[in-house]
Length: 383
Image (tube, rainbow, N blue to C red):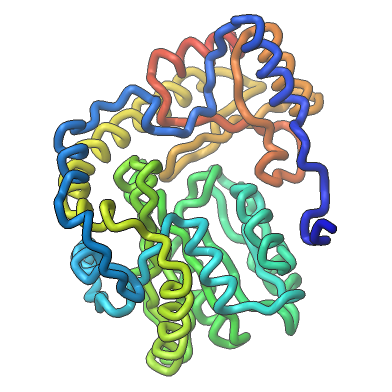
């Protein structure tokens, strides 16, 4: 008998079916939504990375609740604010970080607020923990995305245990402002709700509005966790290393940390080689980060220039991250539009409903693809 948590249709959608049909015919596609950095033609320090994984110390298993001290010490050094190494928990990626926090904070039937639009993985992660996902809206007004605070107030109840913030959000690319962060912390404190902030894209800024919750002002009763990892920061998703920084107030921090360490010690999923290699991976990652920022800047500038005189289509403001949203005033179903682009232009992008956009007229593309592919694909579709 299959668990009731797995409701819905998990079969391939019509877009995936179309892509597979075209590939079976040997037809090459321009994938404007490619988000795997390892296949986007970046110049990795290959020898340095590979050699970092060859340490003889990888043959020694020394499990530590929370993860290796020297890794947590390096993570602490990445931030302006003084972060205690004991407040950091290592995980095998951000998805696992969410899983640990959901186990810490919720019981089956509780709910968590997530941004809308946002990354669809959050819905699945909530379902796996038997908790309800509720949504608060992000509104696009005056060329920027902002949190709809009324939708937060409207959707919480006595079973709401956490609010998730993605900073900058995926795929809308908006950083949370200092004003918004102050409201969220005060609101969560007042209502005894935890705040989970995902900052995996935080280093990839296209504006001066960058803000990190590691610099936020909290109270002694705040429950605040900030997530990050090397999948995006160092463009190494295959090595599976993430972390949770427990920035909770003095009255809450210790009890949360004790349970997180117990959860971590139960699973012990973070492998030894990546922990031993971490200092060298950080060194190698600085150049990759620069390459990605250069790429996303060039692609975003191209999009702005291309759509500058287009009265039907436009690229919405991006402050940071790896994605852009194209807004179209054309009537029609987004899924059918994407299928048309695949069939007639051999170009792939995502429809907005993949990310819980309420209305049609939104297309999502990746900013980390090669500049030539971005230009060729956009020109094909939006002549």
